[in-house]
Image (tube, rainbow, N blue to C red; front, side):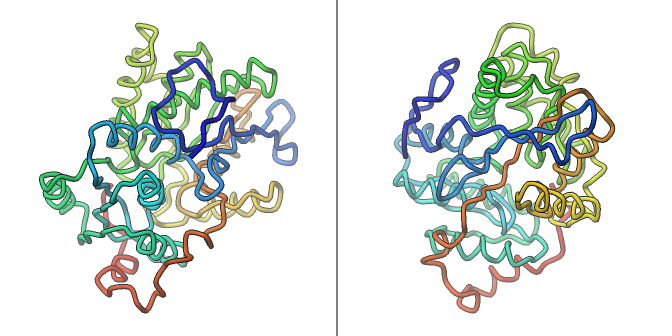
Length: 347
């Protein structure tokens, strides 16, 4: 855990410093179009062991847990959840025991790797068969003394990490590292990243509109939840009155969702191939590939002069996180079954 002297001073720092900032911004000439440039914000580089967007949220969430003198935290996610893995790693680094209520999702090699890494890092798992059972098991763990961290880290506390991230980007714009984006595209699952960005851009006086590429269902529920969270972030970030602008600043793109959460979609797969070929950027098929497909559409439709794709998947190698992981054959069958069950309907 390190403290970076480069972090924007426009927002008080959280008590716990995990990431390295600012993360770079790069122009992608090969995928830009006349009159509309594509830029990438490399939040995959927030940490050398496990980067991505969860680092910024967990700085605030784990600091809150530590301030309350708890020894255990509990969170929620699908069996291949990057949020659960990040919470397990960083929670352990902060001296906290980590529990998680895990639900099924379609199996991929990466999902199984994430599960093995979780177990190797000491995660205590409470498996359930569907999202409907989550509140009961999660509530029981909280009643037993574990501090709650919501799915995706997406409550007001966690989302303030992305208010800070928007402020960081505003500094980069003022320093001339990139033009003010007309559109910022980011994957939208639990909604906290998009909500924090929308509020932070408004607080900084940027005109940038946030597009959340929907990776889960039902989209209407994600819209309601993310917009409510954006308004709460805006009220905390200030200045007064910006919460009213969130409905216009935050929109949801559902065109690349495919069959739903945990499922790849053909257009997202095409976008992932372009990202790898033209930028050398590896995307996962169910989150970032869908967001990148949306970003490419916005560039090709010339939705402004500058489109920013905010990359949220860690690019750090998984090998260090798997050093203590059990072999798949040694994983409890009840946990392995979570990675082969049909995709649940919610959320």
